[in-house]
Length: 153
Image (cartoon, rainbow, N blue to C red):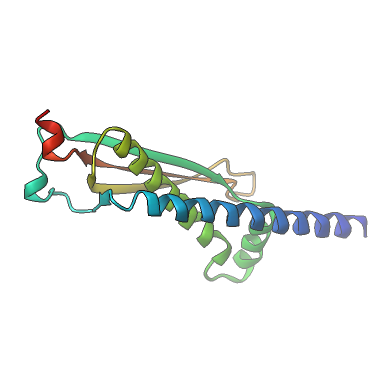
């Protein structure tokens, strides 16, 4: 009985704190995406002709996000019956968007206004003995270009 109470408390805490921090993170992501909207990020391997640069710059953005206890519990339940693991979808969405934002922030600091050939790498890290994901890392990288007028100065 005590074990069930402890489990219920951990689930409630995981849900409450996880939900709060996820909402805060999404608010931060939305605000920063609006601020960095002027930096275009495209997956094309070839930059648009007017933006060709003599010195393209590799920019990266990396983030590690931990899975909260509640999402881990839901994923374990889902693994029993199979299907889509919805509890991890928002985790991966936040991680991808955060990695791209960090890459754009580095490009902005370097004076670039465009990033092309963007790639995303995802890895699960800190797995426990049962193979459950503890954290996920996303790395975003691409080639940043400065506007031609900045290069001539």
